[in-house]
Length: 159
Image (cartoon, rainbow, N blue to C red; front, side, top):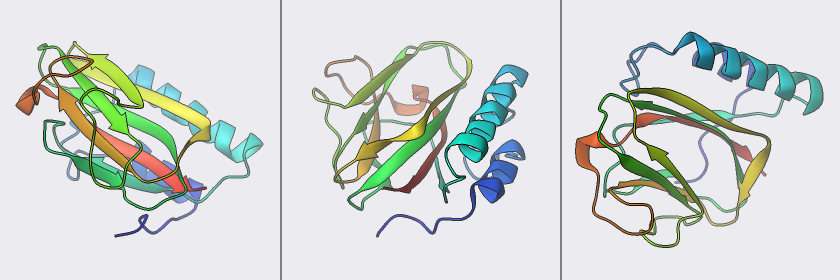
């Protein structure tokens, strides 16, 4: 598998803003996050040349690796996380084509509350090997977070 087919940033924006929950189990995007998403796409359109992007939905992050992109030379532009439980879990991203790292993840965020979060990198966060997500019970190791991990989607593009 390579990076998913990229489409115009405007098409991705329409898809994200209309995200109904069918693909990734996302129920509804909070008004605050809708503003963040809208601002993110305005920035991409006005300052970054409206790059071609793809949405990669995922279900609850657990000890099972979630391959977001297994091709070298891609960029992560944003991650949307929605948590339905208050149990603390850590969402981790690792620059690898197929395996995540419990102890050496490249990005870690604590998802300890019910609700949604949108984290973006308008210039893109480059990954060299691929991108794999995982949910754990602790930041630096831990076991899989099972159904307590967040679900959502990633917005990725070519390097």
